[in-house]
Length: 513
Image (cartoon, rainbow, N blue to C red; front, side, top):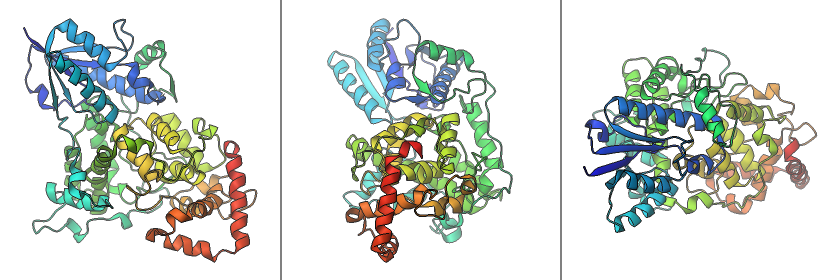
């Protein structure tokens, strides 16, 4: 019998893919746990554990459905710990005449498989690459829409996607509610009411798998939380997670999506990104569920639109930006920032309450919501001039939902402005006043949010103004920063000098803030 091998990567766990419509005895599905994927950055323990657990659950479901599966475990003696080395061995073992794979979402894997496929085809192997059947748009959709325009805007792409897929659209071609964007309605701080839902937790114990990971000497950081993992590891759990979000959190998601709280980590965020990014959930069904919640009167339009914008707009958009500008995008550093990460990125041991909470939460749970990532951790990193590639590697490793196609544009573009404004129309930075407005952190902080300089002044304040002074040549002409520079110009020379002096002192003691 002529055999075909079909590769399934760890973020391609889509049981609804057309591959699985029929059971074919001459097809073997291959999944593998390899050091190549655990070691390219230092990963959070929960990220490695959740992906391995989800891969094993997916392989078991395929076998139960009658498919042939070859699963290579991390500790198998025959595991060569390299994707292509293992494929070479499996091609020989099964004497396969053809091989198929779904297009990877990460550039490095796409290149590795393309180059390997080219070599194998020269040796007579038939190789086919198919679509993952997951996203609303293909890799080049953003490039095709904007062409050679100098300025790309997510909002334009989002409206295009709304029209194309008829999401929250009226029959007359106008958006529901006569507005495309309800972002201005969704910036309220949460003061304890309504009650935030509890975190979803799985029911499976993964401690035996964690012992295998430790035995393989895989280096990780953070707590594995193996006895009751917070991330769904198969589609049924992911659907439960989706149901829980739509029922208990979506009605208030929009209003409080930018809010932060000292003790309530999740608030009303979905925590669906791990299930989406491993493809256990399809974005179409997630968008449909949210839209139906509005149609049924269960959730207001402002919340539903805000959530759908993240899935149909931002998620698809950053993927397009990634594929348009890789491989060079991962190395961009327009502001020439080069400071190493402070030690407390690995402990959370800093007196800045907002930063401490966000980093400790990230280390403990492999999760932080988008404002914590952008306007707390990312904000500080940008103001302090931390090396964007170091920030990128930390974000890619620490968050369970972080895969390069979505993480690189969000970190280097949106958060660190390292692309010079390709993705974001301005640097997303703020002083202590922003954190105070959106959270209760400042009331628990050792620093004083009101002070610009002085021994107890919040570091965000001096760093904010110093950042704009340092980069005035690059940023002053940005129309979205005109008010910032007007306020800066109102400062006296002595005030600006005092800010610069204080900022320099902060930057010299980053590890002890």
